[in-house]
Image 1 (cartoon, rainbow, N blue to C red):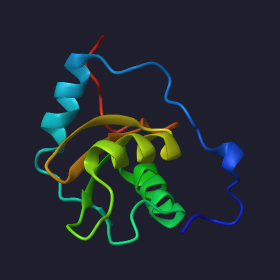
Image 2 (cartoon, one colour; image 1 turned 45 degrees about the vertical axis):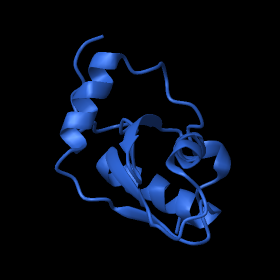
Image 3 (cartoon, one colour; image 1 turned 60 degrees about the horizontal axis):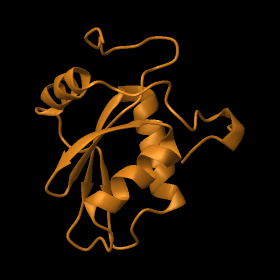
Length: 115
């Protein structure tokens, strides 16, 4: 749950610039060993799920989101919706897993390859 002091205006709605193919490939490889930290269940992508993904991106930069079998939404629809709601890049997805990336504002942990 997001802190009550955070307003929607403070969220970065759009990432700066697009990722190159080389950067996406690098991030997919880096996410390979990660476990999904957020799960989308039978209610689909709700504001609470978007808040959970937003908070997780604040801590981890690179996040996997798992769509459970009971989820009414498919990966191709959920990925762009979550990316836009969280101000993140949609890196990719396989099966029922979505990979999102958002660079940390003050202390980036993931060093992307040059464009």
